[in-house]
Length: 471
Image (cartoon, rainbow, N blue to C red; front, side):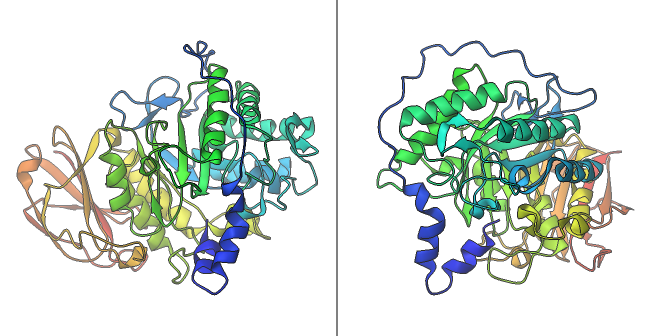
């Protein structure tokens, strides 16, 4: 999403650009909020999910994945329409939601308030047709028409089986559309948001967003850190216990990087423009275990490393690396995160189709039982490390995940090569098949200690998925 940020940072005047787009993150927000209650109120009844919907409602018992309202694992298959609530009319929003439902998308990243830097038409939070969220900018004086429309659109997402990773305030709107007078305002706003969303199933709470805390004492947090936290505490004051996390800054971060937030998040938002395995594994290895969700990388039509626009291969690599490195899903994005003119004509994006292939392959397996493995590949694993400037297409590491019983395994191989496998890691008698991650076409293969990738896939790339299962 922050392509313009990365490009701007590479040219003269970058500091001025960064100050303009992120200056709100250094806002001073005085006063204190009421203390966190010793005992928060009991959680209200969970909002009822539509029939057949599997919406994110909590975290699995081992801390590795998300579950729905019935406790069943949910593989996150995300898209990133950040500015949907402010750029689209209700009718346009339904067009987008219907399309994404048909493409297997079950999760969305959405900002509740708009700003030019998160794709909105203006920094006062107004919708494209002029609805404002607040009266005179007062975050505690709500304009009903804005909030009613937002609620209607989010309810429509839930009706279509889509969870919403929702940012009540983010790193672009703070100090602009969201300018609280005090920390207590932040707390009260959060309580109001919690009550407003209490009947919306499938909400996952977020904050941050290209967020770089402006403080010399990260453990103590900045005024904005504390305000974000007070918003979350206000939501919790309503009895809402739904998962929460923060998105930190590019080019690579995980939510637990920041000491102020490390103990406050329920899952890790993994953010990586370079190849994803390092960041996902860092988040996965955190103790105690929390889901390590790959939630932002490069977007289709953009490249946040400064190279050529991301290709379908770039996107399927990100998804496949994430899903074989411990992530319980992934988020796709395109340069229509801000709904550029003609976005309706680009809904059938090849990158999303191919990411969908990768998701389908994993979802057909007991994916929630897979664990990243450093033991299955004994040769041909590729380059172990990358830096923050490495383009996705320049990474060549193969990644593997195996279930504890050894009955199921998946290997993602990004470039042509011969693999060496330790078959002792697997249960006896497995079958294997190569799956083209661009088309889904599968070819059975005899499982031996040495295997070579089949050649070019249907998209012309050299990447493949090796899927191993019981005989």
